[in-house]
Amino acid sequence: MEFASRVTFLLLFLWVAPLILEVFLARTRSKIPGLILPSLSFLVSLIQVFSVAAYGGFWNVLGTLLIALLFSNIMTILLLLIYVVCRRRRGKKEELDKMSIQDL
Image (cartoon, rainbow, N blue to C red; front, side, top):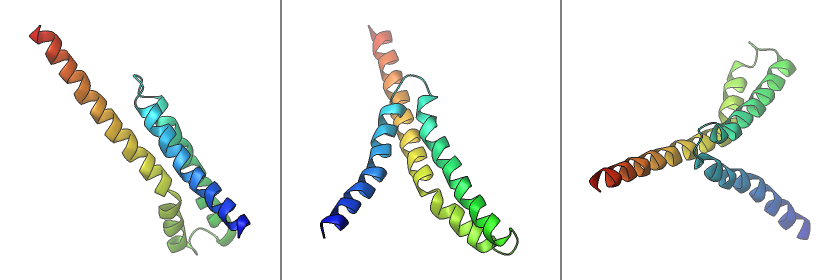
């Protein structure tokens, strides 16, 4: 039972840590750091999809490829959502700061 709880904790950490790191990176002034993790996640998902294609041939397993692409990009989609939300909030905050400076 102890092994299962350690594995569960490790898997949870591997899912939560990139999400927290993405929030930190997306809040930076530059846009580039926030796109690093989604790009890496997408590249890893492509490796998974190409390994499925190499195993069974591209046209023979097209449905399997689409499902593999969908499931392997769950983390990419989450990271991109976090990026978009954080960048929008940052943009709104900058606009409010500009308006308050103009009011002075």
